[in-house]
Figure (cartoon, rainbow, N blue to C red):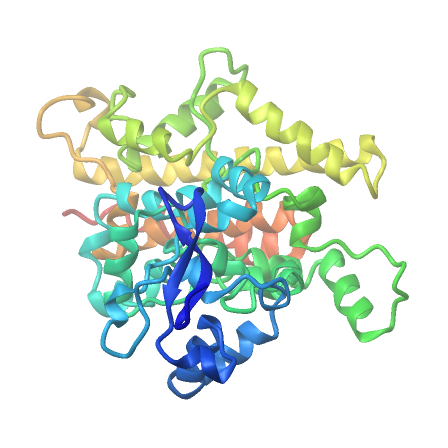
Length: 424
């Protein structure tokens, strides 16, 4: 090797193909330094915390260098823009199994899911720009390098490569990703209160007691990962999905529930008031926001039964999940009633006007843009009360399912009935 050069792995043709190459390091070789040393010497001043985290990581111990992720073009303070944005494909170079599992799960489509919601970009920028609001969590998902560059210009850093949402860069800690509090970052709050439901459930209490040493290490204490990522699988999916909705199917044996689901899907813009599919439904199907067939739903349900059966009798597991299904049905019947009341306010005699030009229908995806108290109450009923009902039930938090969920839904629909005399 000639003086002033260091042999490194360099990009040959895409992030899956590398070759050895000589790379100039000026006079640093005579000081006994490598290129990685030169990265550290600069960044220990510019970004000391980043260096400290990388040095403590498994990547550092296994000689996974800065160059492998960020390329070899950025070598000084004057060419920072040449540093390659990290994508999930780069992680896939070494972690192919986990990356492929991730791509088959719902987290992979979080980025696109936010983009199919028609009014998401109408919300106040103070709530959605940068690292706030919906975008704070929906940065997770498969993105192009250009999209990542745009996000970084908008103030995003951690999380834009997807894997680093849970395995925070530059430590990329497996232990961190397994902690329920890591999931809490996104799975907490108004319409996704999974953390609140887990934390005060029997599962969550036992986990906390095990951490504090009250329970022995051998005690059963399921976490988010135990149920949703069995054996470390990154294909995170559930039978009911985020909205607990399934397409209304002709083979369903419960006409009232089928009709209620159709009403909810109409208020989400996926069906028109006559029940015919819209373009929005195709967009939602593309990001897997709801189960499209009974078989899709059953496959995910059977997988969860197997997980629950690791600690409980299979019969008990099935019974508990079926009780959750019945609660989903009850929320749908209440939700559909409330939607029809608001539709009736817009369109007196709405049964005769369904599907005609000029027919108005509630829009649950208007978010906080809804102009009238009755619409705001309807939005809150769907986004918050209904979500907490089934999230509480499936996470074993019966008090949360009732107090913050079904009980609040009953208050909502009672208020909406009383407000029906209002007119647009």
